[in-house]
Length: 83
Image 1: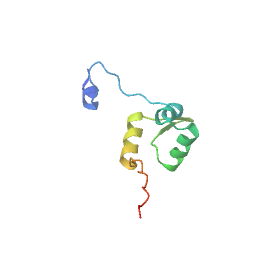
Image 2 (image 1 turned 90 degrees about the vertical axis):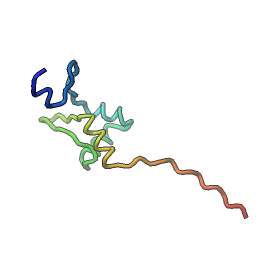
Image 3 (image 1 turned 135 degrees about the horizontal axis):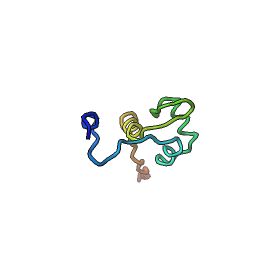
Image 4 (image 1 turned 180 degrees about the vertical axis):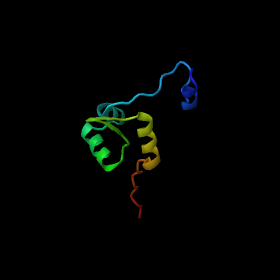
């Protein structure tokens, strides 16, 4: 392992994380590709654009969503007030 790999935090025997497509992001977050495109434009998802290709680093997407959005708990149904 080279010094650069050690500094970058790449463990022995593992490969660096690759990039994924819009379709794969959509599959992982269970949304449509169109929603992913909309979220790109509004800044809700970080991405890299190389030429006309758009790619995502999943760890960056996950971290961004966890930092900038909250996890909502389902609402409890209100019980009717007994008179």
